[in-house]
Image 1 (cartoon, rainbow, N blue to C red):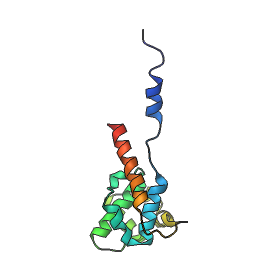
Image 2 (spheres, one colour):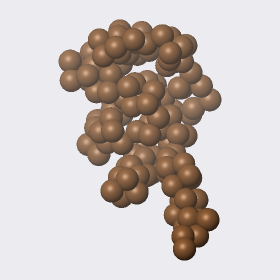
Image 3 (cartoon, helix red, strand yellow):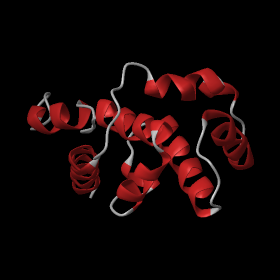
Image 4 (cartoon, rainbow, N blue to C red):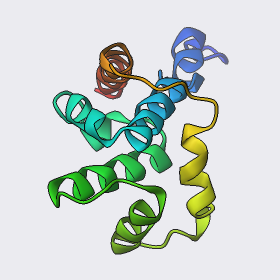
Length: 129
């Protein structure tokens, strides 16, 4: 006879949110906005898919695109780049992008934050597999 309660550990595990660090994602994106040169540290190790937040993923993808075109990375150009990939009404506009820098000190090294985001991405991939 089947138990009326399926394997509760499995169900609890599947109901938990996937590992992420939205704060680390925000630090990376905000720091790049404050100092465009920092994108070189991020692109060495992170792909857009490594970002858990769909908004952060889109922003980072736009930042990479601007970087590859040798353009300045700022909120207005990010929004313009994002428009190429689809509608942006849901993100809240330029102020949402600009708020990524709110309260951030000026960073000169993103290595630890990049490592956190990458590690969480690897764990999510393993869980999904």
